[in-house]
Length: 157
Image 1 (cartoon, rainbow, N blue to C red):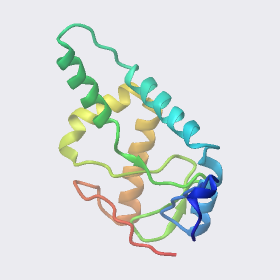
Image 2: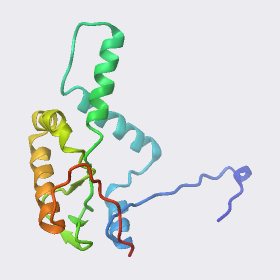
Image 3: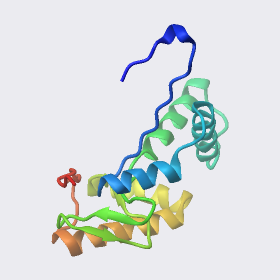
């Protein structure tokens, strides 16, 4: 693909990701793609602002508050959603499954369970329930409970 930037025309691109299939990526792109870069940037900004405002702190120094909000932000990055918008996900048995619950992946080691999972349960009880169901699905489909073993996309379709 090539284009002439001197012509002054805009070039746009959209991306769809899926752990299950190319068709899943197309479906995700259609469902999730904002109309513009500015819309995507504003949506991301608003989402993180709302997340970080779920727990407000006062007092301490500006550096202390920056450390707190930076840590809160990082603690909410994972687990991440591993299912497509239609509920499809790649299980630990290398098969595509479908779930009515959001399937989460990148579950951290169990040693973080004592801290991060309680925070997620406090801030998002519905997400915490789906994360627990995801752990059970990993056990049912893979025969083990994740203890520091993150999934790696093994399927290619």
